[in-house]
Image (cartoon, rainbow, N blue to C red; front, side, top):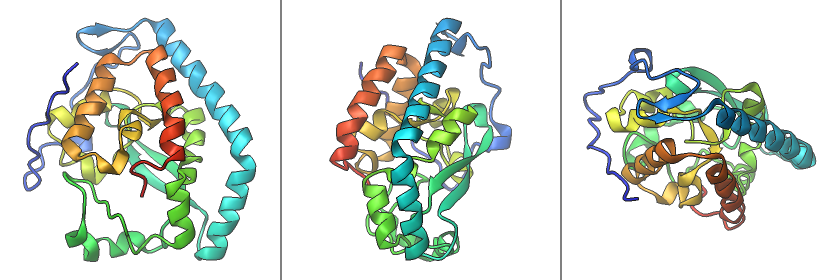
Length: 238
């Protein structure tokens, strides 16, 4: 299946705000108007979410505890970082991560804006000075995302789905990019296994829309399995 390319973003003239998102199909039987998904498929996806989240939290509990201690020792402040993200149908929720940046990272973002290495409305730097050394390793190994499993149990995220964007990013989305909000956001996705930060914004949106249009339980399982080598080899993680 050939990926559709995203129209050019109009960064200077935002066309969407999270408060003005179109009322997408909220039926439990469909993710989009021309595709019907049985309720049993959603039930199976939720069962996988809960099972993987519980196993993951139990397995990584010692790693999470040690990592939290290292964060506290390395940088003053809470080891858990809570940030507002945009989920399915534009609903906002609080996402949990291990903190990898200094506590005043948001205040320092503007002074680094000209050094942004990402395309589209996303801000990313390979050598972001706001990331402390321990945080850099947590990102490289994706350990910082383990607390996302609590979001999965709460039901505002899935194991597999497009990564949840910031409200400030969604305000600059075009209609094609908004399509990724038709499903619940996830911890891993096609973008995650396809190179992450090495993938430009247009292809990222195309991968997410491809997932929205073709997702299945077996497809989710395949993505979960492919995530393991992607994390081990730290592809595009920074």
